[in-house]
Length: 408
Image (cartoon, rainbow, N blue to C red; front, side):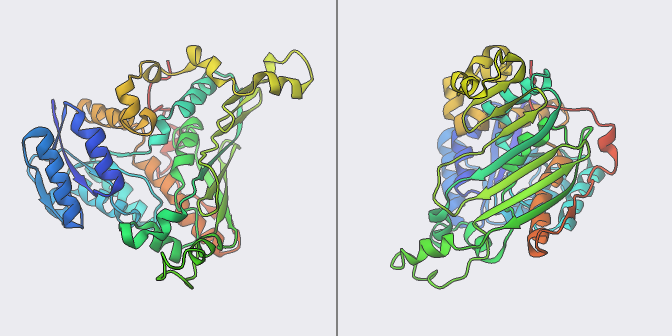
């Protein structure tokens, strides 16, 4: 396969951005179809493809029409959270490879259906968790792989992103977050923080998540935000939002390590993923961009060590930053999220063309997305422990670790 013939399903902010900034610039990708439930979005995307390539793609508001196209190699699914699993499963049923955007699942049953479809058809699926390709995350993973942190004991991550305006404007901008925040209470967007941690801990490849507990704070942030902007959002005044302002989730893994996650999107704050790795010999902390290695310390004056090494992670890049980031071009950095979007799509296309395993496969997608459904059950039950299914059917014990990019 020299050129991947790809269809775009879902053309909101994320889908259209990836189309324009990345996919239309990939010489070995041909966009042959565009689809969104809103006709104006479909038309906008079709025109963008035609301007860039001179060819007008097939356009439809029904994704089933796209999946029936002859010669279609892959689809990129960037629709609402509710439809990701359904569309991805249907695509595999039609023998079409899937690049599946992130989000949480609404039921475990849907995830099992997705896994079974991939096993039955052998059709490739990759979860497009771009944070797995982030510079910070890959630097820390590379250091962990070479033993600098010792045995990993605990990791932490957060989706800490103030989204009150986006949520409140849901009807205006046709965004699905609003209806989710009105009707659900869960860890609704776990994979940005969990994905890189799961890869570092070799989840589904020698290790797995066993159980989780989730607790949610009260939900007052959105109601206060709307009340103070009653003229702008009169249709939301008096509405009760179910989504807790802060949701904390604690996961226990088969190797004894633990993972803490936090959803934090409706109270004023700065953006952070808080990616943190704790081991017996050191730690990495994304919030301060700091590496602490116990063996480097010549004194027991811990405060002095912190002062002298605060923000020191860049010092380790020459020795431990993976090649894909050392060779990063300015154009790639500008393509999306500081470069990780372009790396992610390059990996998907290269694996598809070479018939190589996807580094974030259907088992990863199912396990990570399951956190949402499980957290909803745990929160509703007052923090009751929920068992995490083994979507690999026991294969996790013999599957070899596979990083998203080469570490050396």
